[in-house]
Image (cartoon, rainbow, N blue to C red):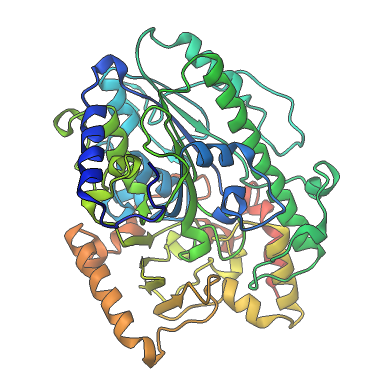
Amino acid sequence: MKLPETSGRTYAIPLIILLTVLYLSAFSQPTSERPNILFCIADDASLDHLSAYGKVKWVKTPGFDRIAREGLLFSNAYTPNAKCSPSRASILTGRNPWQLEEAANHFSFWPAKFTSFIESLQENGYSAGATGKGWSPGNAGKKDGKPRLLTGKKYDAIKAQTPTRSISTIDYAANFKQFLNEKKEGSPFCFWFGAHEPHRAYEYASGITKNNKRLADIQNVPPYWIDNEKTRTDMLDYAFEVEYFDKQLQKMLTVLEEAGELENTIIIVTSDNGMPFPRVKGFVYEQANHLPLAIMWKKGIINPGRTVTDMVSFIDFVPTILDVAKVPATKSYMQPVQGKSLVPVLKGITQNNKAKDYVLLGRERTDVGRPNDEGYPVRGIVKDGLIYTRNYEPGRWPAGNPETGYQDSDSSPTKTEILNANRKGQNKEIWQLNFGKKDSEELYDLHNDPFCMKNLANDLSFKKQKENLKMLMEAELKKQGDPRMSGTGNIFDRYPSASDAKDFYNRYMKGERGGKFDRIKKDVDLIKP
């Protein structure tokens, strides 16, 4: 029996009865049969570059494609914040960043009162481990006098030969195998595979010299970058590391098969935010927040191979995992979560028999580089093919101040090309899109403008739609206790940074150098007169 790909449709009564029986029977299993969980997260990979989506031909990801083919491919999954640590904080807690106090910021101190789902699973009989990047960067603090392990005990000791000097030497699959050998016999497990790839920096031209890619293979350089050899080379270097992540995923699947654990392991594969390029990572646009997601669970998914079109937020992972792990809310040791379980979607029944039709987005301090470590606060909503965002401090520089090299945009050849052209008086419109100040409101038609190039916020033909989106967004944010809705949003600027580059702007302007200050000197020099 094959279900339609899209969700939220009315099915025949016999089919509803059948699916309901299957759904209930799946949760009548004894505790000993609770599924294992393998959570796989790339560091800075965009949806377009996982080949199951068919967006580009110059990146191949057969591991991810297998998860999608033998499980489910989600076409509308979004992170509420497109930066590493706040995105991961939402994944781990099931709460939106604006509900997480300090953890709404990048490089923050983790609030002691928030429990991760992995800590909760451990309290309920799961063995837990992790390899690579967990919740990071930030300071997780201590519990019982020991460093707090939000994603489980680390397994990073086994090393591997890597194709470039920029790729992590951690042998992810071998460390996973060691965890399986050491875990408590008979207990279900949760393992966090946090790849360091494709996070910067890259070995320049490695995509060409070591991965046989060609500049001409790229069909679609985003229109907000300068399309030249350096930008394309940068994109191919990124693609090389996306494919490296996927190869490690394939090895993880082999380890599971050899251990006889593949059938009853839920495998979730995603990324924390979009690619580490200008106007993507850290920003609030379609390319930044709309992310890849595939889930495979051979024992639990009804009619695999479907494409799920429901709107999904990263805050939905926690209730889904606690649901399948049979951890009641009263025993979860967690603050109330905001997300909704995806188990009905896995079983072929939409959430509450009604498709979710919007997601909320936001941003606070995503990096240093402004006076007094101020952030660039934004809230947004995606619904009905539109993305609306409100910029609460339009007088600030969204990519960080020019004087210190636009630190809220990762250093890269692509970034340098834009800044270098701007210094020469060229491509001013591209500089504006990536680094210039923005209006207080932005609205984009994603069907006709997926790269968010034409702001429709002042277009009278979209006035009613904009007002409806703003009203819905603010009503939901008020329900969730967002400080931005009560006039106390400046608290996010007052939270201290856990970075060694805290108070970066003020220290740099006073002449301090060394460490990170020297690493950005090239970008700073490029934008000086």
